[in-house]
Image (tube, rainbow, N blue to C red; front, side, top):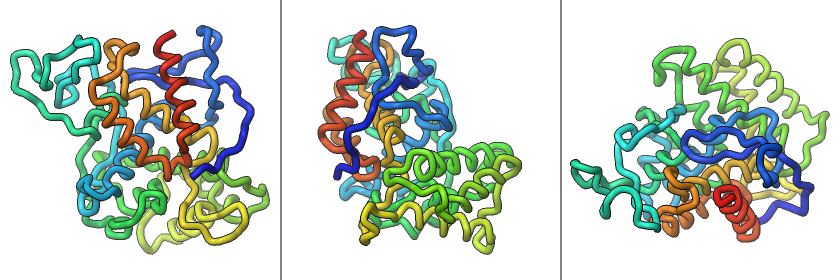
Amino acid sequence: MAHHTTRDFFSGPLLSGPASTAIDPAETDLTWPFGDLISLDRDDIRETAYEVFFTACRSSPGFGGGKNAIAFHSTHHHLHDVGDSGGSRSPSRSGSGSSSGGRVAGGPVVVMTPTSRIKQALGLKMLKRSPSRRMSSVMGRRAETIILPLELLRHLKPAEFNDMHEYHLWQRRQLKILEAGLLLHPAIPLEKSNSYAMRLREIIRASDVKPIDTSKNSDTMRTLCNSVVTLSWRSPTDAPTDVCHWADGFPLNLHFYTCLLQSIFDFRDETLVLDEVDELVELMKKTWSILGINRSIHISALLGCFSNNMY
């Protein structure tokens, strides 16, 4: 599914590795070709990219989907050694790194799932919660029909967090993602006078001061849901569509996708890829329907990541 036409490329920040920083194009010989984001930082991108990946995988047949879907939320955490990740790093294709089979030196063999591998590479530490039993509305649905930030806002409540400040930061990230995907970088052009867009902007602006009320009977939540659903399910021709559009606008989708692609590289030597590269890339392809990626875009993004890491 391709939503994209030829676009102008311009410089912007590049994400790379578990302790990544924005790369200033003026300090490199390469130019980041996929455009800049004005409202999100690298942590926002990493955390949401993993949530998209996790949801896409768990919504796929044969990947433990259904009842275990979205049983987490993420917070940023830099990984300094293997012990922080709960597993070992696989040997690179050069043969360097941990010993064969994922054995930590002096320790037992550790089995790391593909989603854990992506989580580790993105520098994320998952905090286990238990919202999955309350997420019946998304179980069994195709990933491209799930407006993930909205579902998380609906089902994760303040009690799931350590304190209200942590919840407010998490809620702000979900709203910023909706703002980026629906208002700032929409896949389908949006008129400034759109009433749903104006209501969404008002809610996002109000959330700067304090968390919005997301309880079931909240008027604010009803307005948020109505606005987000209406904006996400638009189509270029106003005809019915079977795919929602909240993360497939350019360049937002490319930032999410290249962030995932960076995880195929060994963080100790980013000129090397992991042994699991083929398996990981195949899993990443499950996000294509959410992010509006096709084979041509995939190849361009992959080449961009290789070029950045090699030079």
